[in-house]
Image (tube, rainbow over all chains, first blue to last red; front, side, top):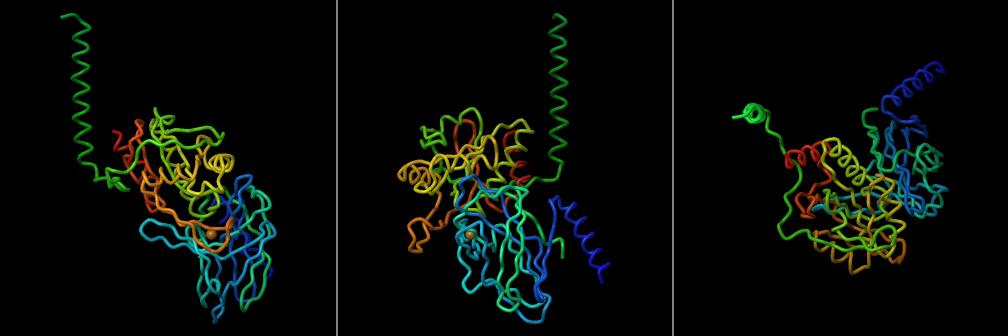
Length: 160
Length: 200
Ligand SMILES: [Cu+2]
């Protein structure tokens, strides 16, 4: 079992190197796997930041990401984007982000994201910051988001 | 006829032959699909705004190189950084092709985005990126000229609001004329190839 875990780690590290990331990391809570929470570097006095990740539901019932909290920002919301006629509309997701049983939901650029509002500190590339995620069924988990470049677009799909 | 003239004549014929050969080669190459949109003729034009140093900045200050404009706001951490990183990537690739294009970020949120904020935000994405703001009236005018839609999402908060905004990249030629528009779905390589072909 432990050996198996070690092997998974090694594969993750190789995968991270291939993806050109500083490192990849994942977390388990209940039946959920949270893959590589990441963020983007911000300007010195930027008000807002963002966090992305992939969330896989290995269970047989749906779960819902209902809240995210980060000490780096005074407020956090769960957002999505819609684009119609070339206009981007960013909106809060009412009722949280559903993670259907057996599926992976991607929080990624120009789509679902955790919006960090009222940043206290600049987010610096290469650093990490803590993020607490709360799910309706699986409960609460503390993760760390890896800060990538200011306009980074990571593709976590190839991991699955 | 002196020798130099003969040599020049031979050289011209050689150049012409290479050009014909190249023409045949390119017409036989698979058709290249340009990306983006030809802007309506009434869009674009000169503008005067405020630079990151607080001083007046006019579109004439960009002349001598092309420019890629993106309209957004610094409180936007998701779509705007994605698009500005695409602008920065395109500008670098175009420089390698010998085409000088200045990246420009213009805020549509002048009430919150002062000169320092737009300057710091632009610096994040490219060392040459110019960040611009202006008075509410100046921003309204330039947005209207370029057909940029933006609207504050009313949530009852005076300082913590979001903006809906159109998301195009505008290409100006070195004379300041709006020549092309790119959408978020247009890949960087395809944008660069479109511009290289158009400039050829
Ligand atoms: Cu958002």
